[in-house]
Length: 555
Image (cartoon, rainbow, N blue to C red; front, top):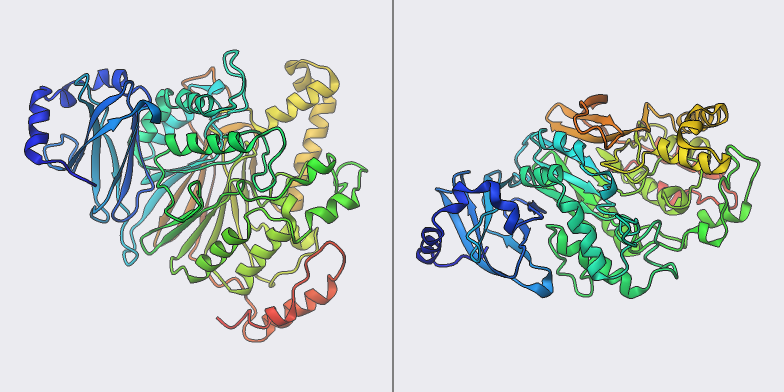
């Protein structure tokens, strides 16, 4: 972090009358979108705010909440062309250390609230940690009451897991955002939410994007004609403007969002970008509601073939190779893969999730199996529901006949939303339009309840789900320690009108320390894989290759 002369900084504070300490209630006048820190590593952190007007802003970093032990100052300009965004990359910090930060407008002598973060421990230290995970925050559902509870979890950091705003939503009669100014407006609307500001000040964030930062179900690698390339670039620009995210230094990758970070000896996190590089959705080529005929008699062999086409990609070749190699070489006990869309199959309308990219899903999971990478946990959001799937490969083995080692398992936890129609509410709206009924009539309809219950039971059975809650605003709390990982879904009623909704514990599970994914020692594991490979050579399915499987038990 670049510092200014300490005497000059001290003079500035004296000239301001130390208002930063005594006027926190006025903070939102000069910094209406609050503050935030993000992408915090062992030695660095991004500090963020937006000033109400252009001018100089003093940034302070300290070891105490009263700022009597200031470690750095810097004066920066809030520029109108940059939407008065102030962003500092504070470097040279100490690992596993608590810091406090604030911003002071030199134009108005007003200060922001104080924010805080703790840097990560070194890779050699086995520090326990806690983090919160959720996504999907539509300004129509403010206040985000759920996040006030999240701010009280005393988390080391939290993941904002995509759909950080809804650019394609009509808000207060304002049309969907289509340019840089509109995208920035949508981010500002969410940052004016008090519970969100409280959470951003309480702990650092790791932000991920999904589709609604631009538009529903967009495919970045084969852009839908309804979005221009300029719109896409400006949506990305607004995201990077408003998130405390460290910009990539890779040549030609100004908007690269996939990245990883280590938190001591216990955890490493791999944040994926499941939008920017993905192939065209099969649904755009006419895919129907239920192409595999799980519920309806609507078998679509052409759609199934396309979903299994190995040429189609979710992550893109470079990101997939990056993920595979970094998972293989990680020495962390637990490896969290953050995918904005679920690996778990919802059966119906499969195209936008990993279901729609079945070949690459299989390639990634098979790689983890063959390399005997242990301790992998999948986290995802997007579907506005909460799930615990003890093993995402169950559906692939039993339904798609894709083969894995006998004891190989990969769990997935799906969490959310922060504030948007839940999965059950969306189903209710769909049936209401189909049946031409109002919301209350739909909920009372036997046909809706009967159909919904059948589909939900079918999804749970096909995947072997241990927990499913489709109608709560919720987040996941993850506690990582030497004893293992405890993952707890907590939520409130999905009604934005109720601002004092009590927090409920919906489900909790403890995962013990990981074991290698193959239970078949020596040559037995590759022989099992070869046998499975021989049984599943059929069109549309990627078979295992005995040559590759022969190394499965080597590590």
